Image (cartoon, rainbow, N blue to C red; front, side, top):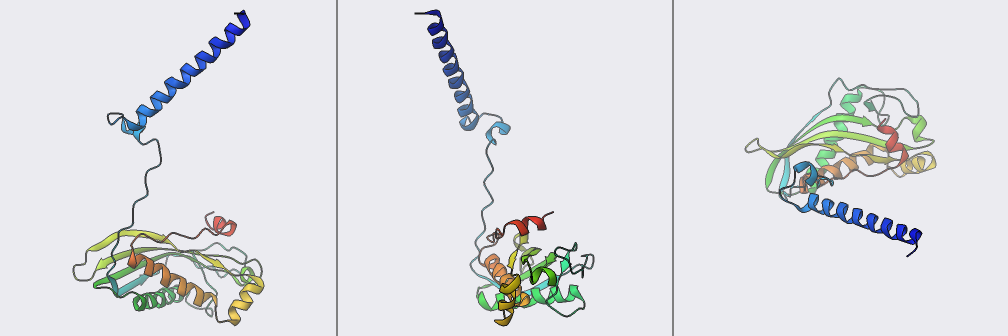
Length: 223
């Protein structure tokens, strides 16, 4: 065999040997029960599974909108603030947001008929709807986040771990917003119905609500 061909054969053999050695080490890292935990957790951890409680029923609820949440009345495309709300006349925005959640919980209570009397506790963390400028031009995302706790009213014990729930909703803009208003589908109506559905999902299967993926505007809300 010529020296050059011999060199190529030896090189290929060396590479194959190295790959085989590496593959064996990887397999051992995944399946060997005695391997260190850091090696065993090389892949992503499975997401916690929702807990099923098919018999929950809203008996009581509380809604907290902390005063430290900052309100913005700036009519910009994306004003900075924890609470941005234009679906009611100018007034106490904290009280208005609380009323929206309470109306949503009343809707949920009427749609879930279970046997476990449940206290639903909500603390609002963010309620960033659209300004006038955004609503009648580009549209955007109603960015809503809250803490949710579910308790058995008979014992006071938690039925599921407290959970931060993101309940974003597509915000109509331009002609779509105008048409929605004419149909009675105002920001307030849409958001109230959306929150009612989110709470209903959490009553039927705590931990089951998955936030919608709404693209660029939603990404901007995280900045």
